[in-house]
Length: 320
Image 1 (tube, rainbow, N blue to C red):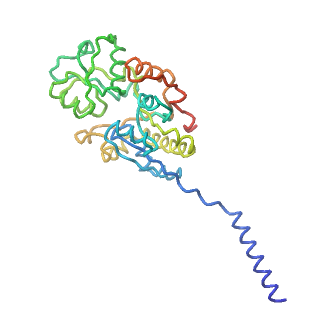
Image 2: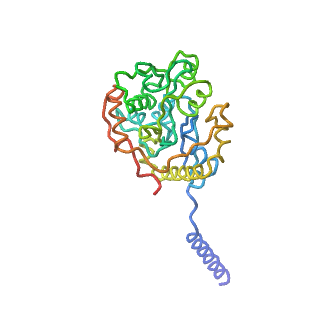
């Protein structure tokens, strides 16, 4: 009888323990890993700040950055499924979605404003070009089929230059564009910041920048459509972390000057003087912005199929 009583007590104890375990807090789910291809440009700073400040871990994510040296390399990686997300531009999304919907833009990465330019049309030191009228019929160095070419057309058209008087020359790599501009072989080129500032210090002149027509100039964060479909909560958490990082940067930009330099987002000669930019809060390109870029791509022959805004832009994952 004594042995039986002890057995009953042990069984009761086990049942109580199991009951307490069942009532206790559930184990935290394993963090989701997101791979992001990034170019060494200022547009990616908020994503890097989110990492440096531990914001991804806070949102139960592990984010792995995959450095790329060019837009084609970046696009190849996302098409191949080697990365989950990229920083790109709306034209890139349109081109990637020509055959089928492969990617969607989920947030602005960076955007021009009336007091903060991203891209600038520069003229060579001894070109004699001092205003937009001087660019009529003059080849402007651009990366063909990209936001840089699109912006060059829209900025010049916005200043009254006829499309037939706009000439561009394909010089895909920024260092090559800067070198040809410095030597005078190119009389004009469109450059992103901070390279435009570097060119200015080397004797080039500013002709026009996108602060005059900021509606045309922005970059975006883009995810693969299958990642959005299968892991929407992870994408939401990623965007929440980026949003927090943007708030931190905009509150105290110079706090992240060293990180900007460490990650080589600015050329070494500008490390001490170039100011950290401000960044857009949660948002995506508008229908009007999308339509204008789509129409330009079709008109120029870069796109064969008119893809829809709904297929290419997804605002549903942004923090509320």
